[in-house]
Length: 314
Image (tube, rainbow, N blue to C red; front, top):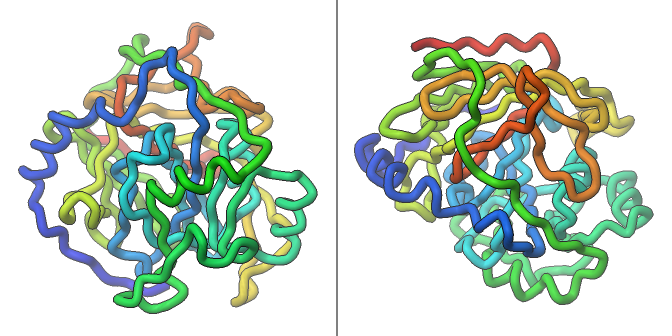
């Protein structure tokens, strides 16, 4: 994998001003129901800088293959995002995440087995591979294949033409409750080649990796931040196909539930995640068995292998 750092145009103090004023702005009221859009976004050195991540309500990151991870980006209000880039291919777990929100998934394409799975499941989906460039575009300032993008207006325009979706109502927001330990920083290996670090400053969890700060060009190069960071310990397996370089494609079992950690408000909580089912979204429970509410704002969810060490410092 290539290495390199794309320097953000705004420094950390600018991030903090954005975070304090805007962390709760992404999430609609729990009573509202809407059709969700999910977009497959690349995460590699060649994908920097990204666009559209900060406008997301939930972002899932997971191993794809060969030490590279991928994002499935969830928008409760698809029209809110501006440019979303770079859009890449689907992965097996993407379809499970899509089902949990009942929405439509947008992606570049996929291997023949994966595209066959999309078609067999009649999954509400829109791909460049199937639908050409109606709702997808190429950025001439970037090298292919890292230059495919879409936008909030494209997502909204495409939704009426996608059948099989259902509406989704976000969970109620609030304080997590329960016992927690103070933490200003957490770090863990997302893959063997990709280390993720969140630093809690100014009311936001700022994302960095071995490539430096993750930034969003739609936000004037500000560092991407989350209100809530959830690390799910999830068993993986080989899907049975490989990428173009021969690396096995990874799948995850979201049907079992298991241990998880929640990082929010400068605290780290031990929780558990519940099996993903149709329309369930992300569900967490505390040690007493009660549902865990999350503060309003962007939530990032990381799927990692059971036993992965999450280091935390106060």
